[in-house]
Image 1 (cartoon, rainbow, N blue to C red):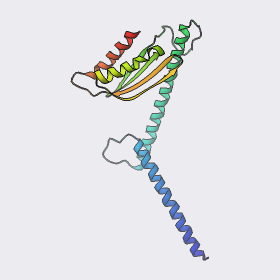
Image 2 (spheres, rainbow, N blue to C red; image 1 turned 90 degrees about the horizontal axis):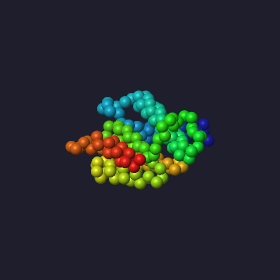
Image 3 (tube, rainbow, N blue to C red; image 1 turned 90 degrees about the vertical axis):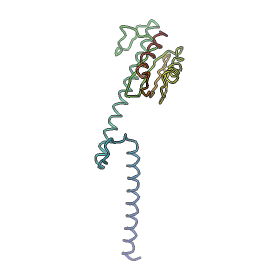
Image 4 (cartoon, rainbow, N blue to C red; image 1 turned 60 degrees about the vertical axis):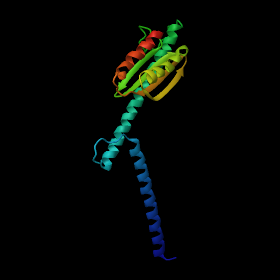
Amino acid sequence: MEPSHSNTAQSRSRKTVEKNRRMQMKSLYSELTSLLPHHSSREPLTLPDQLDEAANYIKKLQVNVEKKRERKSKLVATATSEKLNSAGSSLVASSVDVSVPRRLPRIEIQETGSIFHIFLVTSLEHKFMFCEIVRVLTEELGAEITHAGYSIVDDAVFHTLHCKVEECDYGARSQIPERLEKFVNSVN
């Protein structure tokens, strides 16, 4: 075999490997950009700017996940302390303020634009409340449910609900917190 022929074969092989690597990188890049929120500006960002934006978005998501984990642990600690208090035990987690015992069910509502994030903690015997809240939101207030889920820890049921409500003539969006809190408090 001639030395020039083997150099040509190695060169072609190297070009093929490089071509495959570039195609894989383009594919990964396009997958990354599809996962990011769209940039509001009409002018395209340079590749380094897009990568910076992706890194910032990932950091923001990590912070949000950590906040949600902390929130979950606080809710679990609260539910556990309530269970211990109701059993007459003096064992209470020190990180939870139990000076005024909280009763179940509880609801917390956060509004972000047209999206409502609803967190409901109920006991097992009050889990029907979740279905009633979904009914009120969809049938009476015209909300579109975008996510619904729950977790059960001991005797507590942790519900999460995300819904989208467009503003309409009769102001349904402003009625949501009031209606849901009134419903939950009527069960207490």
